[in-house]
Length: 261
Image (cartoon, rainbow, N blue to C red; front, side, top):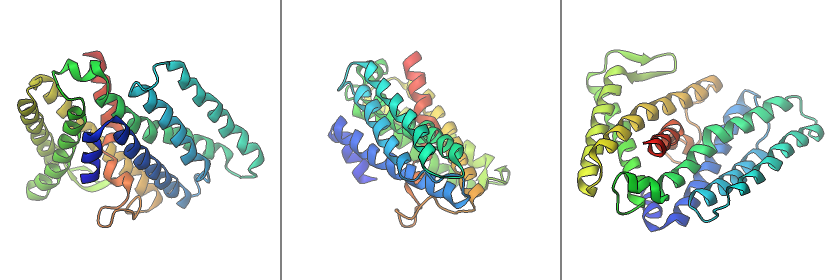
């Protein structure tokens, strides 16, 4: 995680690049999970589409390219996605197509949103931040606080299971603990950065609640394929998708909140 923090602080290009790497690795893990149940065979073209779509979105989001019409270059790749199935001689063509489109929504878009979240003048000025990268840093501090404290509180006093059929270890007490401490982290981060306490506390609640939902959605995916971890890239922590499942729902929703306040 130290490399992530350094890339965020360095500049928008290092941030975009590291999230490109993470999103691509997470996409590969996603297809590997689906392959275990023969739900997709699109392990080559799928990650390639992720790279193309993520790159185009990020170039627009960090305002390197100001013409939004460049995003329409995504369309040909979606058609190629369908056309390649005509010649692939695969017995699950529509599963391949559906899984790739879902991966773009489920993984690529949230990672790309992180760039827009941090490197857009209107976004960070709304909450009174002087340094644009500090918004993204605060986002991850709150997310990590929520995850850690939900685990600690759940282990200490958790008795009421949240959704045992999907994640037996998660409890309502853990959810409440993660939410309280994430709001506290948001309050402290706002105080340290002299920015809007109100908006940081709202964002903290969104990050905590929807970060947990992202975690549960990934647990559902893994449980359906009878796997414990999404991958083995990070020893002791599972795969990239395991480490970043908290952003899958929270990043787009925090961005939505900031765009409409």
